[in-house]
Every structure is written in structure tokens, then in C-alpha cells.
Length: 230
Ligand SMILES: Nc1ncnc2c1ncn2[C@@H]1O[C@H](COP(=O)(O)OP(=O)(O)OP(=O)(O)O)[C@@H](O)[C@H]1O
Ligand SMILES: [Mg+2]
Image (cartoon, rainbow, N blue to C red):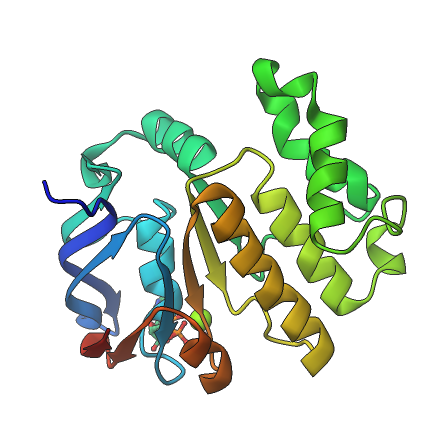
């Protein structure tokens, strides 16, 4: 092993689904290699397989063939229990369908993932406060979901994803419905997180401006890698 450390690796990853009696190929031989503390954009047209790739990397879905290696461990043969543990320990998800719990306030939402780990439960409140402050939400701790703007909600989702200090953060269109100012805050937060914790961050985005800011871009077209620019 060299000085670099692969945190996320996929090898010839394929995903197909049965569709009208045929197999629809969604991802085809996708091989990527992402190093520790890299911030990588995944871009490509709608339907090109970006969210599918994120689901496979996060162990939320299983490939038809090929491998996903997280921190040196091939996760494609793990059972459901081991996969759940891997997700809890290693991955923070900022996905559009990972919504906040509406009956909890911002602070409680961020504390929630820490409740499942005995060692983390004691410092949970302080840590949740610190994370929310880092994301510029120190004055919004006790606002419920409905009392937060879209950009604020998105930042609470990011804080919650970071609660258990995962080494990997997977973001699927984290700035999807945000205005310029909120987008800038989210991007700034992602850079701060990487700086503070060495987090490896993968961001699916339709924003060319955001993609350009990151270290590298992976372009998917029709389920295949089109170009990888350093
Ligand atoms: N369960 C499914 N059954 C059949 N086809 C599916 C299923 N899930 C996804 N697909 C198809 O797989 C392709 C890739 O979907 P995916 O959600 O990964 O695209 P995407 O790149 O994230 O697009 P977008 O930018 O619109 O979010 C699409 O053509 C979609 O219709
Ligand atoms: Mg998508």
C-alpha cells in the first residue's frame, strides 16, 4: 500500500433489474477508487445511475455482480446484520428520502443516531450542539422540522449524518432545492467537515459549479463511467 488509502472502491460494479421480461442494465462495470479525505462529485444526466451507485456504496442495495470495498472490506457478501453495523459505523447518509423526524426538534434529530450507541449516548447532547453550531444552526436548536427553512433542514440532515463521526459521508443532491446562500452554507460545511475530521465525501450533484469546487469529478452516462478528471 502506498501513502494513499482507498476508503471506497468499486470493482466492475454491475446492477441490472428485471423489466418487462428483460434485464435492464442500470450500472455497467463501474470501477472507482476514492481515497481518504477526498471530496468527489458524481455527476451525469438524470437516470444515469448516480443514486443507484450511492445506494450500492452505502450497502443499501446489492449489486448484480462486482465488488464494493469499504475501508478494505468487501461488503458485497456481508449479511444484513453485518451490513447494518457497517453502515452505522462507517457511513453518514444525506439522501433526500432520509428525512428528519417531524416531531423532534433540530437538536433531538441530531442526537437520535447517538442513542443507539451506549458509548456515545452520554456526550450526545453536547456533540449535537457542536455539530449544529458548526453548520450555523446554534440559534435553531429547538426548532421543529416545520419551523426550519429548506436549507436549514438540509444542514440538520448533514449534522445528523455526522453524529456518529462516520469516516464516509454520502450526499445525494445535498443542495438540490436550495437557494444560492443556503447552497454556499452547505458547501462550506462539507469543506469544514473534511478539514476537521478527514471525512471522505461523495456528492451527487446536478450543479456544475459545485462539482468544480470538489477535488474530482466522476461522470456517469448510461450507467458507465464516462470520464474521470483529476
Ligand atoms: N427499482 C427499479 N426498477 C427499475 N428501474 C429502476 C429502478 N430503480 C432505478 N431504476 C432505473 O435506473 C436508472 C438509474 O436510476 P438512478 O436513480 O440511479 O438515476 P440518477 O442518476 O440518480 O438520476 P437523477 O439525476 O434523476 O436522480 C433509471 O433509468 C431508473 O429508471
Ligand atoms: Mg438520483
